[in-house]
Length: 252
Length: 252
Image (cartoon, rainbow over all chains, first blue to last red; front, side, top):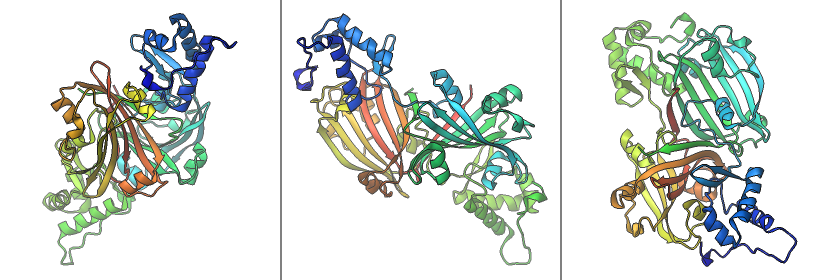
């Protein structure tokens, strides 16, 4: 970094505030202002300590404070990064479920089951599930929340000819894919997921604490077994301010 | 399908309209009503012809009409499906670009370049591109349209130290990744893409013929070279009614 940056920290040695505290506060402000956005990789420690005009040990102490606060994270062999303030499941890239992704990222969530009953599906859902319109399917409605609040409202429609009795499951404790694969031994193989921005209906807005008519991330999914039979259809509404669909992609 | 479907077609042999025309019209209405949604797989031809009470040849003639109209498509070995009315690039699943995805799907698009100039980047973009805030980068603003209208508004910021002179490219004819890889020999390796629903700003709404404040699909991307240097940052605004981000995923 050169003088053209124009915002070298003003480290003061004539005040009672410790140098490492001044540095961590300076970095905190850069993160809060958005100047150092989520996923920004900080310069290497030798360069950064030189820039701040402090020893490696002092810089390190400032960084450790911010790592403990969750504002920075270190990835072995890659460096120090600014942490994202939203959860970032890779559900567009992998056929994992939100609950699996939360578990692998160590995100604690809670689930409220709003409905778990047998219904006759709407005609488009019947068509995509390849059942007649009078066949009863499971309708499962759940709200998943983190400590920040609700992040997703899920409507799942599940073929009960493939999973008889599934409506008796306690879905506050069990995941849908877990039950289909574990309890019923079904081989979930593929899914089509589409993502679009939609206007929140009053019902969606209420569940996700959003403004009705405002933007909400919509995910539609059809899940297929290894023998190509569809097993599940879902409409998922996601609070983009708390959960951002993320893909880490390779070119080749 | 059984009698419980309640909507068996009323094929009439006492009218001048040909039977195959009646069948294709019946299917057209089911698609238009959403009863047979995009990606619905039709029953196999023997079953379907029995249901309609017509010969395989008559059914086949009706299907061919609809395939020629683009309402149905046949996939060898898998069956006949209802075509999606929106384009569905797999940009959340693969590190392909919109233009590459359009080309592979045979979608014809046009590009208007609104800006192609060297600027000093906003601080968060400078941070993610790992350049100082006074380094000049390419800012490329494009609108991509299909015959339906504008589908995406793209803002790309590109490091010119890695691609000197890139601002002289005619981006109505060339793709950005094509130029970076072809002309400059850069090895694009990875990208992080995030997807969220946002409210359209007046500028975005105007470009995409949307309502300001209404929902728009937002994609943020940072692209990295094989040596992990960031080369490009982008903000992409997508018209969800015309283009739906799609992933076809495998469980294992």
